[in-house]
Structures are given as C-alpha cells and as structure tokens.
Image (cartoon, rainbow, N blue to C red; front, side, top):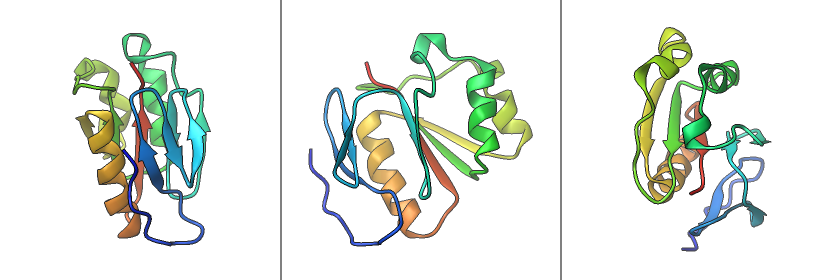
Amino acid sequence: MKLHLNRSPGINLFTGHFEHFVTVNHARHDTHLVVTPERIVTGWTAGFDALTADDFAALAALGPKIVLLGTGRRQRFPPPALLRPLIEAGVTVEPMDLPAACRTYNILALENRLVAAALLFD
C-alpha cells in the first residue's frame, strides 16, 4: 500500500508498505530495520524468533520515548524479559503488525514525537 506523503523535509517518513518491504522517503528497504525521524538503521536483528535483550537495548540507545514494534503480517508479542532494557529506560513499546506500525509512526513523527519504528519482515 502506498501512503500519502505529507511533505516534511528532513524527517524520515514511510511512503509505502508492502508484504516484504517498505519505502522510506521513496527508498526501498527489505531487511529488518529501525526508522526514527532522523535515522535509518538497517540490519537491526535477524528476525522475530532471534530477538534478544541486546536488540532492545540498541533501540533504547537511540533515545525514543515510543517504540512501535512492527512484527510482520500479524501482531506478535516478544517475551517480556527481552523488553527489560526499554522498560528500564522508560520507553513505551507497542507491538503491532507492520502496516499499522508504519501508519502510526508517520502520525507520531509528524507530531515531533520521539518515536522509533522497529520493523520485522516475515
């Protein structure tokens, strides 16, 4: 699905999401990644089943207040113990399917919120 782009120079926004890739500012990304308004981090993890506490510690280090965890075509929840680095940093974690994470991220980023979208593909 293509998303309508609200022109905001300098902010990373999702311009499309599809089954096996997303586009950020019209550039295609087909590996697990983290998107913040200022950064794109590729190769964040090896996949949902490979998630570790270190993966979430790396997210906390980016400084978001909200992490939208896009878990692919369906919503999945990681074991709570893995989320400890984010919880201890006071970061809200919202697991959701990948399309919902992309749409929600755009809204929050345009509100100048400290948000990160951590996306996992099936």
